[in-house]
Amino acid sequence: MAVLLTLGAVVAQTLGNLCLSLAARSRVRWFVPALTLLAVHFFTWCQALKMAPLSKLVPLTASSHLLNALLAKYLLREHVSAQRWLGTGCIVSGILVILL
Image (cartoon, rainbow, N blue to C red; front, side, top):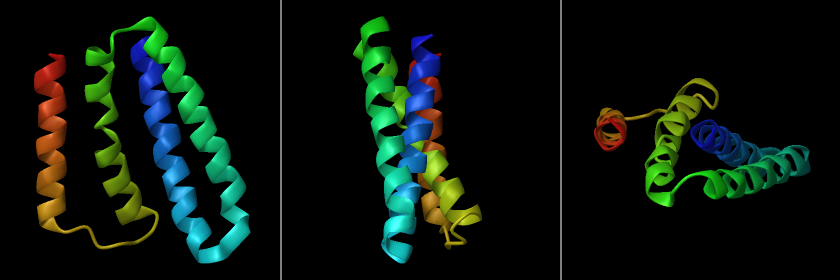
């Protein structure tokens, strides 16, 4: 359950950051959803920490790098360099090594 809460917190944080990025472009419209998602992230993360050790959950938070790269490319239509994809792949590989 703690793993699912952590992944939910990561998704909420990533979407909150996306909304903040959009808020910078269109002002107030995305600011409230950003704050809401970041609050969801905070409280979900706190609940996950009550259920499992920090050393087990922190590696999962690195998955936000993959989500950020995917959202940047497909939602914001930003260029994501090959170097960034390689770095993201290394991070995901590291997560798998630690967790398995």
